Length: 248
Ligand code: NAP
Image (cartoon, rainbow, N blue to C red; front, side, top):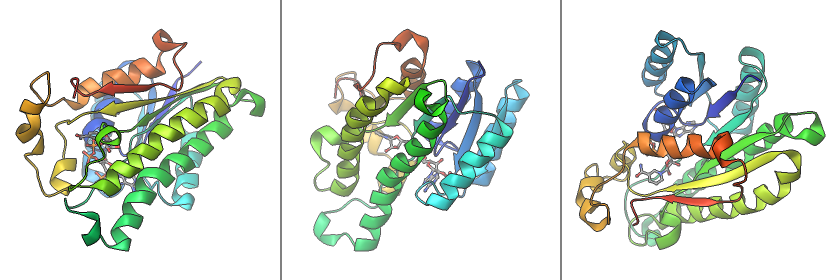
């Protein structure tokens, strides 16, 4: 059966590494992005040059109408989805909750939680055996922040990642009978642009010595973990929260 994957937020960082690796493993891939069309198109062109099949679709996955359009585009251009990677995630300027505006909290909560719920709902409609599908896999990209809470820097972000842990546990029970495995990978500190959004672009290097493995992680290392969680090698793994943080 043709393997079709959507990776939300995949123009850059962990999402882009996952989309590229998935293509190399034989998936047709939908790259999704918010505004950086140049990065998304570069990745799409690279996959095409390697002989893979990819489309790039702009959609704000925190907005239901965009999610419906995104899935309709995948249906039409790639065929039935077999794998969903809920990867999109944002954080904003480091600080304390007392200084965070309601608008910021709304942005972080809707992007990091609502998008996972909306995209999972649409994926399940297509994968569930009770709805005529053939099963599939969902991987939620959570964060090690759900273990320590990120107090004084971004407790809002960490709170959303706690929700992703719980969503993974609940959804894995709900859709297991439908042939869908749901797992979560919780990266530690990874070399991507996300830290610049928090106002600390060098955060990974600054914290590297606090990681028992003595370094930050690379997006490609998280991509390998995600592909494993979606592949046949992990066929009896569901509802797992898998830490990929160098033992931090
Ligand atoms: P990143 O480098 O900042 O990339 C973010 C991606 O999300 C970009 O492709 C961006 O698109 C897209 N995006 C943002 N808002 C979107 C929206 N509303 N709709 C659609 N796409 C949107 O992020 P990252 O570091 O790779 O993080 C990926 C995931 O890993 C996140 O869930 C994050 O919380 C998690 N994580 C990261 C780390 C880390 O240290 N990096 C650690 C733990 C967990 P544009 O290019 O168009 O802006």
